[in-house]
Every structure is written in structure tokens, then in C-alpha cells.
Length: 370
Ligand SMILES: *Cc1c(COP(=O)(O)O)cnc(C)c1O
Image (tube, helix red, strand yellow):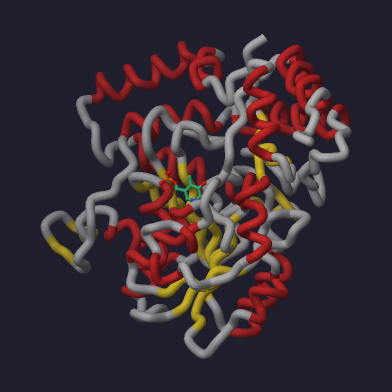
């Protein structure tokens, strides 16, 4: 049996007719940028997240970046201010910070959840720290209780990178509703994915929402009047129409991801494979199922030999990337160990029970190199 890491074709085949009808609706409307679909999706997604505003933008990186840019325009952030960020995140979290002339301060994760360690974050606060970026890595909510308390006590902005965590919940609050503002990505492989690039900023902060809505559209609220030196980063009408279809199925898809995760956690018992922990069922939407193994590369080769495609998220941490020579001197031992040892098993809403069995069996027959 061959088990792909993720088959987007199978994901979309389930409601291809609905997607095609939605695409036809946009094609026939004759209006392709900022028409009726984007504001309709913005209302629906804001309601889903339980926040007042959603602003559709071009992608997840722009969503994150426009939050920081918006807080600069509003006077809450200034060039050279420091932003605490998990050291083991995807590079986009860092890019959003540095692109805005802000300084990323990488913070080690908690070894059980892989999310930012609130105690380490506290220790990293200095006189220039103005914000903390919580990334709900792999689909599990970061410790928002501790981070909210920390942000309040130290007067920091709390920004969520929720690109991997659509629908993750804690105490009836969803990802995106905890911080001052949150960024979502709708890259096709995300839990809520468009059929191209897309992203959104969600917030209860009306001033920020207005600012981001202008920034994404040349800095303009009224045509040909420019409040800011903005950019062009709008969610496409056609992607908004796709997302309106897919949003209806998101909770069902999350339930299927949880089922696969549950089967892995019941079925994989191996002395060399450390399974991910979930603090509670509702906190984790299993964007990725990430195991830890001291013989990661051998495990990946073994799975590959058994037809199973596993991937590494991520092989090199941001502070060791050629893009960030100024961070190369940092030593972040846990982050560096994780990047050597993590492996993501296939997980998706369209995996069959047989495919799940094949992954479990292949893990169980892994023999570490001697
Ligand atoms: C995917 C992702 C982003 C960026 O989203 P794009 O839409 O690909 O630009 C940012 N942060 C995290 C944690 C992500 O996984």
C-alpha cells in the first residue's frame, strides 16, 4: 500500500461539485477582486472564530506581517522593538517580524507540547520587548492562559500565528480569539485551505481591522485616497468562494483528523518513537502528527520503503537559516534537537482505516540502526 503524505485531490473530490458551482458563481458575476464573496467569507470566518472582524488577505505571511504593520501605524510598535517568538516555528513567523523592522527574540518550546514555553518567554522579556507571538504549532493551542497573563502584566501585544490551528479550542474560545489579533493561512495544505494562496487577519480590535483592511488595498479606505503606504494583498474572490464551501466542512474534517490521531496514539507503541501529547481533545486540530525519534532519518527511510510518505517540519530552525546570519550565534539546544528528531506522519481527513493501519504497522516494525 502507498500512503501519500496528503492528497489534496482526494480532499476536494468529496465536494468537487460544490466547489465548481461556487467557482462558476464568481466567473459569472464578472467581479473578481473585492466583490461580494470576500466580505461574505469575512463575516462567516469571523463568526466561526468568535471575533468581531476578519480581513481577507493574500496569504498567511501577509496576514501576520500586516498585523505588525498595523500596530506600527497605530503607534503601538516602533522600529527596533522586540517580539518574542517560538524558536521552532515556521520561518514565516520570523519573516513577518523582520520585514517590519522589528527584532525577533527566539524562545525555546515546552518539550511536551512543542509550543512556546511561557516561563522561557517571561525570562526573555527585556526593556525593548513589546509583543509576544504565540504560534499554535502543529495545530495545538499554545498555553494562552499563561501567555495572556504574561502579556497583560508586561504590557505586551499578544499576537497569534494561527496558520495551523483553525478551530482549535479551549474554554469555548477558538484559535484567533485569544490575542489582540491573529493571522490565519489558507494555503491549500492547511486545515482550512483554499485552492491557491489566501489568508486572514482576525481581531476584536476595530481600529486594527480598519487599518489592515486599508493596508491590504494600497493603504486606501476610499478609492484613490491613501492613508498609508500600503500594499496589494487581497484575498481573491474565487478563493473566498472556495473557502465558503470548505468552511462548512471544517469541523467534520477536524473530527476525522482527531480520529486518525487517536488511532495512531492507540496503535503506535515503540520504545524509539515518542508520540505527540494533546493536553485536551479540543485544543488540538492535528494539522500535523509529529513524532520524535533519535533515529529520525532512518525512521523516515523505513516508512518510505514501506510506501509511506512522512515529512519533516522543519529541518532547519529559523536561527540557523542563511537568511538570518545575525541569529547564527544563538544556542537553542531543545529547538536544535527537535529539528533533528521530528517527523510528521501522514494525517488528513481523507485517510482510510487501511492507510492508518499501514502507517501503524510500518512504525511498529521499525528497527533502529545498530
Ligand atoms: C503556513 C504558515 C504560515 C504562512 O502562511 P502562508 O499562507 O503560507 O504564507 C505562517 N505561519 C505558520 C506557522 C504556518 O504554518
